[in-house]
Image (cartoon, rainbow, N blue to C red; front, side, top):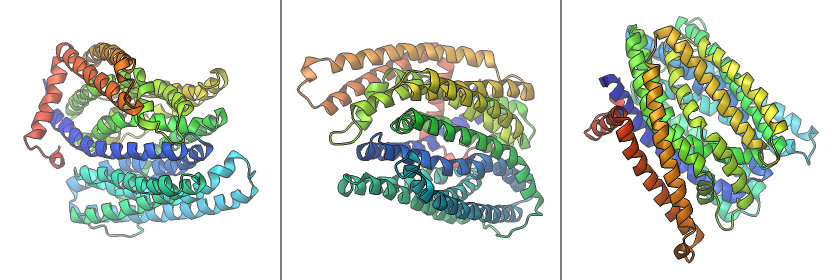
Length: 539
């Protein structure tokens, strides 16, 4: 039976997903311009590798670890002590974070500046380090943004934090438009312009979210008070999460350097494929995970494990209803999708780049299921202030990922080694999700794995039928002599549009027959939202 809490979570995630979808669409525009301007050249790969270090520190001090530690402590403080204590908590955390991040940024820029003169000027490191020096300050701004977003999410204000990436993408698009119009023949200058725009976008996001914190009644009392018991508890919670995030991001960085070893084009091809995978992941699974953390936190504060189990089970089935066909669709239509999105006349992303990116996408796509499962499982542990279980599971998974990365890069054939790295990521994510699922059952009891597994199997069957239909329709329409007279891009749009549309109708019909309860649950959440339910009022 569907619970009202489960419907509210799905409804809130759908609302947040709309804003996330807008961000992802703008992100696609940005990536298309990146493809036009830089293709899969060494310059683009250098940017992707350089951007991984700020992302490492962002995960260490920002989104993952900080949100996981701050949201439960903030929620508990608000419930038990009220607004004055909350203002002190936020002020103390902000001051502490600003000092640590400021010192790390200055030291990082200084270290990179000293390294640039001593590296081989013709080597790959010489392409990476100047961009890294520009991008390091982004870490300061985006981690402070993550803190503001965590506070707003704790207040069930999900839309404002979701608008931050929109700012990021709009400023990136503006920089790339300049690069495409005036700097297309000077890609080394264009990529630096994009790097500076990334840093500036982080600063703008911080200003916007900081102002909105005050509008929502949070008035931080800034002070470096290391004796605050709430701050100490948050640091204790943050420590294991930070270690896990650090291990994960170090693994990602190693994967990036291994990809660079496979070929100058490989990191760029993997990044383009990741952007396509992250569209459905961000719109649905990430949005659901964002809504679930404060929801689980309230349920945990009320000592209600049954509510956590029910909310998790309903949320998982709703997410799998979308992620399963998305994974199949991206895998079977990888080539047509990549060609439609990234290959443009006059751009640097052409046939060879499309082949490499499509290979990576086909191997990444099945990971949507594993990535989504982990994004729903982890908030349940964080809400119970159990940081160790996700970290322990993550350590095993990342160790397996690193081992598989090395094995696959050495054993897979040339031109497919980067696809091996994508496969390693998917398999490691499956291992992580399986470990978390077992741990959740030991902690709270079974959320109904047999029923969930049966539902997902039926969704997979419906998705397989959808995949066959979509692949066949696209191939048939692309081969029609009647469409030969139209432009290549128009033919691609028509063929892929009809294929996806007919595939979606096929899936909807199949899943309505095979999974009527899950179909009705999501439909009811959508209809409830259309009737005026508020995202901000989610429980």
